Length: 289
Image 1 (cartoon, rainbow, N blue to C red):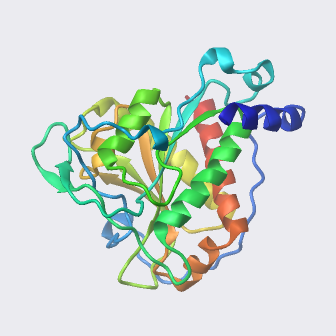
Image 2: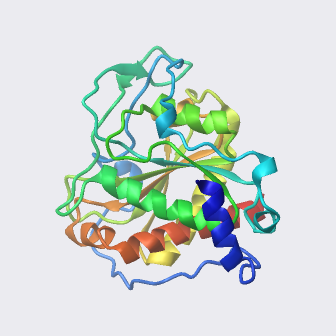
């Protein structure tokens, strides 16, 4: 389980990790056409707009709970992210289920609980999201963090209320939702972050720390990959944000509708750069808190 991976990783890395520095690799990607406003993009692959009645039970098989404090080894305790709990939420999932759920604990408005993600020439979004989340898990655990996953298979029926509940129950310091984007305009490309905002937030206090984490992590990921930084977009309509009781952000890793970006996102090396950038950004956020 997670502890075995932590101990194995820490024995190899404890001697060389004196901080949160992560190697950053530039891809040299050249700018091309595309809107600079992430809110102006038609996001066909953005967060699954799923909601339940707020009391739905979470499938235990999908949850990877953090270890108790008494299970943390002395070596792990010396690592820079020791004591931090991160929830990684790979967006979407393959399911035949269909229902509605409330967009916010403060509203009776509902949305579809399960929505398919974007599709590229060589990959589907739910598979990409999970692959990058697993890599990110490895990076974070090597630095001492405890990681909770909202799903660990591509075939998964987990709504956004349930995803938020997993992070809430774990007492996560931060929930990172991992997604890829899509647009009818195939020339649009780049990475962005979506952050919680608005009057539908069940826990308004998460807005400021979420924005701070989003800015630092997006900067680190675009530095690590050379991807275009499209900036932050405030969202008041995402169920996973509105039901979250912990700081929560949503990374859009790039556009599967853009052939060049889709091809990069299919590469293991590029995915690993994203994961390393996320871990570096978390380190920056922890130091700044």
